[in-house]
Length: 240
Length: 155
Image (tube, rainbow over all chains, first blue to last red):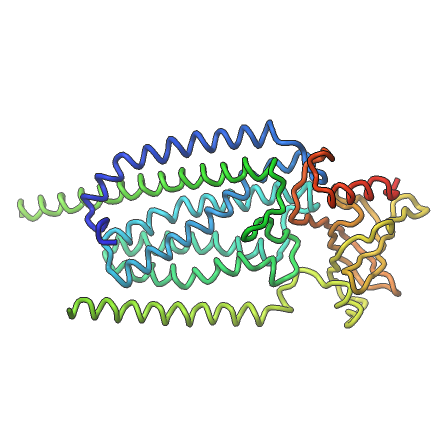
């Protein structure tokens, strides 16, 4: 755990890991998108609209995965005072929010032809919208506390409180009657035909690698920002 | 040694906070159990019929062979079932693409005399994703599709 606590060691790893993740993520995502858009057969009921599966599902998983990353980093920050944890949490927020928005938008576009409506206030859709608002609140809070120089523990506690929503999103289609379908993939069981499952898994892997690459790039940028700030402050002290 | 102790103290605090938070979340979700349902099942409607003026949603499976076109040409009648109870539904208008027999449906409307008068109709997709080609389907699903296509769909 503390092997990565050293920002210098982290930067040495991130320097080559960032482009590796971004390039492999782009290749897999492009491949899965091409496969999903042109190669898979139409679904027995939905027909061609099934192709939106390959962006909607990875976006949903990473929207939830982004908040999980923020919550885990926040625990590392609160318990171990890990110097990189606050930066990792801040860096995960924007990509997580983008994926949540993509999930909501593609779900809405998918819902119109299949369900017959753009939006309904069922448990799954509502809890996912709450996640989008949680991201907005977290980003505002984390930026404000970084700018004002107050404790990073405040956004960390907010992240842990907001983490309750993740199991609620996951279970919403099981606990309550919803218009959204129940989970297709459960432990050891898939209700998705292999023709769709393989491009879906590759898309999930590809988008996850992209997500990791973006988070690392943002962490490097945040660290560089802090370094520049510290250097400027030192300069100001010297001239004063 | 004191450092380790403080670290453990914080770990215990965070764990307690998490347990309390998750407990509160689960309790809230439990409290919402009957309130956060998007629709009622036919069993719930039969057991506790809503007032006739109240707008409610009824959800379930469209019973096989139950979709019947009405004489006016734009209305349909069908039966929604959840395996235990069933409820006849009448609807006037254009149905969504996924509205087929043996598939999920959510109807919004009011209770009439023994028939649910739907004002809007939403189709529910289930968790199965299967290509159209029969040879790629599992035997059970293939039989289901055969039954769907030969069981007299509405014309």
